[in-house]
Image 1 (spheres, rainbow, N blue to C red):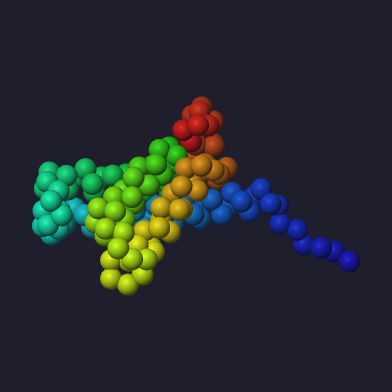
Image 2 (image 1 turned 90 degrees about the vertical axis):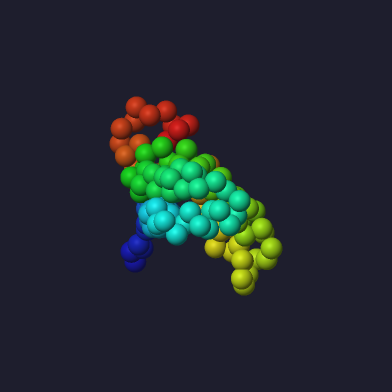
Length: 138
């Protein structure tokens, strides 16, 4: 009788690539949306200066791109974690887990970013291929 086995290491790398890609796509879409002039009105309603529109948009767009390719994934995930903490506490006020101003999706994105930050990008990444980048900043 034969058994089918999946190489655990390869499966882990595929999972990390999928997690990185999903998180990257989400933040690319959100980052591009923040270049919209209407986002500046939202910022002023929160008491944040309008000048922060471009840095906030770039802080979501650039790490999203880097996560997809697997370059500087730990730094990108750390930046995304900071963004998600801001979304949870500053924008939504951490009022409830579900419903209006619920933070459940934000917590999932934060947890995903923390997993990538701690575990790294996996072997299916440009950082692993280059091998000249120190592992601590993969």
